Image (cartoon, rainbow, N blue to C red; front, top):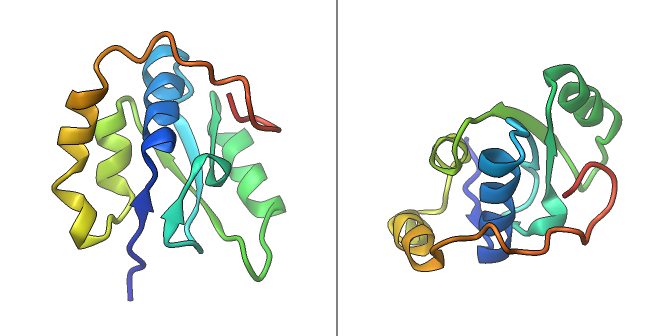
Length: 112
């Protein structure tokens, strides 16, 4: 059974900046949660770093998976979205406009 997820708007914005602006094309996300927020997504430039993070951060509450994505749309396609949210992702991206000015300094580890 595949798990469905909902991605928070701030997490979508962070993903767009990390993937498309900073070229961190390897994404580790917590597949054990339904609601993916900014704390559940990390970004890496190299597959080995992402895979190592995933292997070292498994618990009863966290199971990180690695995906490769060159765009936000590619990342969203690979993360199984909840049916109620799936159709609004494109609208969310269009409504955000230019996200280059967002402050992505919060977070820890490899988060931007």
